[in-house]
Amino acid sequence: MDGLHESYQSDDAYEKPGTEIVLAPYDYVAAMPSKKVREDLIDGLNRWLQLPEKSLNRIRNIVVMLHTAALMLDDIEDGSILRRGMPSAHVVYGESQTINSASYVQIRAFAEAAGLSNPDAVSIVCEELKNLYNGQSLDLFWKFHIHCPTEKEYYEMVDGSELKLSSQPMAFEPALETFITSLGRYFQVRDDHQNLASSEYAQQKGFCEDLDEGNMSLLLIHSLQNSSEGDKARIKGIFKTRGPSGLSPEVKEFVIKHLSERTASLPYVRDVLKDLASEIADGLMALEEIFGIENPLLRGVLAKLEV
Image (cartoon, rainbow, N blue to C red; front, side):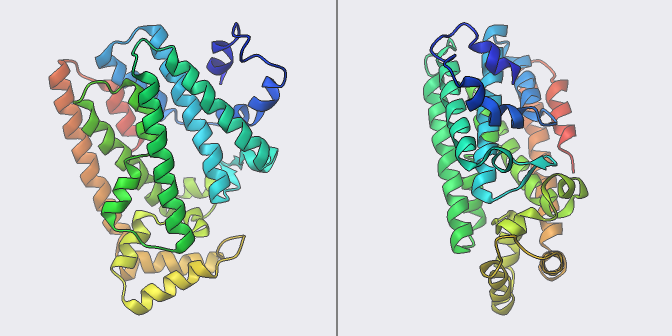
């Protein structure tokens, strides 16, 4: 948050009247408690890349801006009323101000990218932001039409995730691409799992919020693909008839029981997470050999994400 303000203290083009107002929803979300995984990821990658401190600070600013703006818009699109245990920005400031603030911050992120020494930095951020919006459009389409994608389609959507966007300004080494993609997949699958299985997530986002929103998580995709036609129709029927306030706790318990017992989707996703974690650990070891430098910072990031 402070980095965004400091970056433009001497830039008259950005310090127009109303700047404090337009940034208020952004500042509110940026100040929320966070595990700082993306910032730690940047620092871990820089152990290998050794970017100048000025460039590193700009990249940190870009990451925070784009990540926070994505959260603000995502909460509106999903109808989420909680973010990290606090009211979402649009609940406090209204949808219009929140959208305006997120859009403004995205513009600032492009201005930051233009200040990096790499001439392709703006193009990289632009391309990854397009991927993010394309992926989000798929997620919204599946939800609106209660359409169950294949797992391949799910991973294609995830590969345009904002975690990848957060690290992409640094990923100029081709050897990092697979590692970052695997980490992005792990992050999203973990989020899907924790949303339905973690008491901590329930406190921060509400009990099984993905079910309220009708999100096509990996658990739901696996369950629908492995359900009988009758069970599939019942599960889809539940999402078709859910009201503005989502599903009742009793209906959520019914769906969770189906995911856990009838289709074993919860155990399946836990196995997927184990496989991805192993793949990421192998990738990390390979990168340490390529760069000739061990990376305890990235190992710390992986430890934070353990389920």
